[in-house]
Image (cartoon, rainbow, N blue to C red):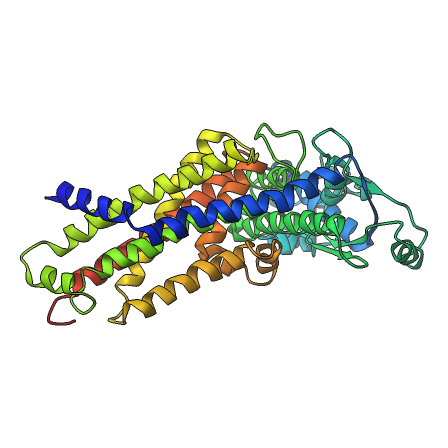
Length: 472
């Protein structure tokens, strides 16, 4: 029964011209337009370094010095010496002897160190709090060149190995503004803190867009790292292993297009538009799953009346329909991806097998979304379709399909939107494969996808079971 329903729905969906046009032909046409619009832009500026002035404030260096000081601190040796000190003090007191030895760490400094439970706590601690005797390195040796953002700028390269950023020296901010006004530099970058980087430009252009894209992605990644550090509990944050791993991961995350990774990496900043295009195709399946689910509702169609009054298992029927839509949607995303990769020669970066697997997995988000929307209330199908289109187009806009920096702006202003926006989550999965390959960042994105998928599907099934012919 199930497979017979599945085959029937599969044939109906495959013959739907409207569905094929909007979910297959339209994305293929849009991808072709993206190709001609963006591929030539990046190609014309390669091997041409972008001149910029980078101003680093003392606050940025001091913040990173504190972070490194906490990383250098040998807490095990310090705690051991403190225990020995108190043991000696107790023994001397028991024997009636004077004890004049100074503690290895003052009570005030010790209380301050124990109160550190997050990144925000670390960067507000004075360097004098960290006893040099228990440091594996000297944080005061940290200079401007050690800052993650400066290292990022130095590591950026085009595909041919040419440096992407050329740093120009200016004696003052006023002199830098004159260089910018005369067109001698593309922008002035001001580094106030690890996660506070500003870009000043004069007008627009491709180079300005690339600088904005680089800084946006830097801020996006470093803010993710800081958030993970702040989410740790006190004991975990004060663990040597956890903190060191997070600091190492932070430095790795900031390698925007460094050649050190084995992930394949496409350095073209405009590749994110193609990631967003794929995410839109994935969620476009919502329209097909919505219509198939609505057709089983008695208040929406004559077919729904017949189904509602029949002894057929409605949930089983809808699951068969949902599986049919999922299969068709996976086929469409595979065709779209194949056209982009082998037809237009778009380099997505990363392992191709994982890119195809990710695309197929992400395509289920659209079918689950349509299934959920179809069972919300007893509104007319036109209203439900409009609601689905708002989610699809609105989500695509917020993830950067129309404006590439939108997702990064939201990550800074309201990161929750990127966590619940299916398009942004799917885009992150493709981006992480390009930048880092299969790793923590990728797995986190896939977990988001699976969670969003499961939540929408479970709510839709609950509403489907709740509905009946009499209630509609």
